[in-house]
Length: 381
Image 1: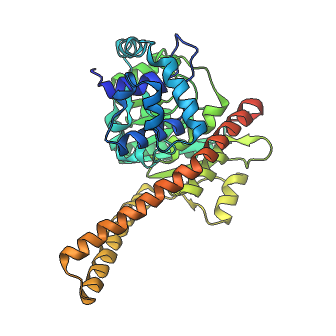
Image 2: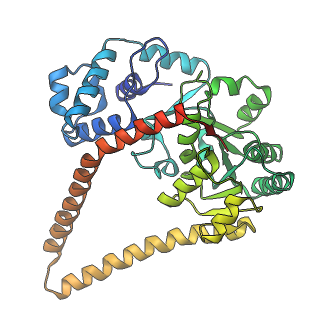
Image 3: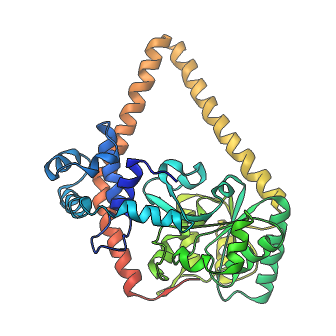
């Protein structure tokens, strides 16, 4: 696998390198860098040689506090020369690295605010091109809920639907094992590094058979992390065409990983939710109209796929109606095209300014959240 200078720079500054104590850039800091470079028609490879003064002047989308942190981190790693060695070792061990530029549209539903600079992976990334259903649920799911999950996962295999899960005990493992044993495909985002996973003979079998894809934003040898377990929930919900909630508690002072992931999905409207069983979380989702009872895959995909086509058609129709209105008001084609470019440019420029104003607040929130999850009790399910 060949890596470009842009990819080498991304890895050098964003990865948790094993042979150094220097701190990698956060997603928010990397986004600030990418936006700043892009606006000046520069690419990440310049970070390999740029000096501190030039870098500070280049970071036009960063606050003063962000500039200081970013420059310090870049300077600390610039002369390490370790990233290419690690990249070569990762490939030698049979893993791949998927940078943002190579990520499929379903992963990019997350937007840069949430998506990491890269994923480590093991398996066939083309599995991401199939229709997919996320499956989430408590470790302590009832026997009835697990039987229903197994039946649905078996059905997924026969319908060519990929199961996406976090790989935890209980609902996650039940769904993945059932679909793989019936010839289906699955994607797992573990809460620990991939090295531990590929040591299992059954995992290696399904990977070599083209049925299983493992993905993680953590370093390959990372131990289980409660904080990351919460953060990776979005990787299950966003890429899915629909998400099945098989069992869930409701978060109190003790966080429920399943519930937190579902709540985030509802907030960002990544994927429609379907439920089985009668756990407290499931009952609340139905009561508030946030989820439907699962009945069949035919119903799910006749709902989701035409909906997207209808939404695109609706947008096209609205644009056409505005064009007709503009023509009726006397605008010619050239003026109308200029007006469209001008208005859209102003809109996206305002969006950039809003992101810049809130980026510092988001960074503070991210840091506080990490302290909360690292210092407090986290219940994965």
